[in-house]
Amino acid sequence: MRKTLVVGNWKMHKNLTESQALITEIRGIVRDEFRHNHAQIVICPTALALASSARLVEGSEITIGAQNVNEHKEGAYTGEWSAAMLKSAGVTHAIIGHSERRQYYNETSAVCALKNKAAVTEELIAIYCIGESLSERENNQFLEVLQLQLEEGLDSISADEMNVVVIAYEPVWAIGTGKTATAQQAQDIHAFVRQWLAGKYGQPVADATRILYGGSVKPDNAKDIFGQPDIDGGLIGGASLKPRDFFDIIRAAQ
Image: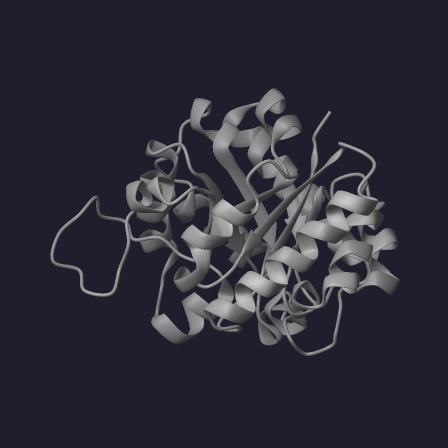
């Protein structure tokens, strides 16, 4: 049975002191109210707070993820950090190919393929993001776009390595806009992704791979979205900065 995963992506919010306070508040709520072990919780603060956050959540149900990772092991790459560096700081997951990275930093699926490989080589769990724009959906190109992102981004990932890869479907038109794909729309895409995984890696890998939904998930729609058979949790943006909202989403995923 696939274990539900809820990932909070804080993006570029919260300074170090604020991050530590927010992590501590969420940890307290989880400690006091989290009663089932079916859902896994990952929080992705800024790079500034990764090491201190990892220390703060030791012994809890929460682990820490990074919002990005460099594809190289080391070298003259100013401002970057490798998978091995992240792992040494206590990081367990890394978001790769988020739509904002693709849009603002020109990350292609080919670059994401290198990042995915770098992450899994260090046994970091790669959360590989795919998604279509509004125009691609309206022009009925979205399945073609998603398939190409999967083919290119997972090009060098073997079936054995898929045990440390999570797919996150994030319709770009629903990120930070308040718009949300219907539960059925999301399920249809997740089923398509799982079918593609079965074709490339075989049904056992497809059945074991977790596929998350990201795109304006809130406490009032989380249960409906997470109740779909192929949706295994969520990649949560703005709501993850609000401790009570974030925990209500976690509870909906259990």
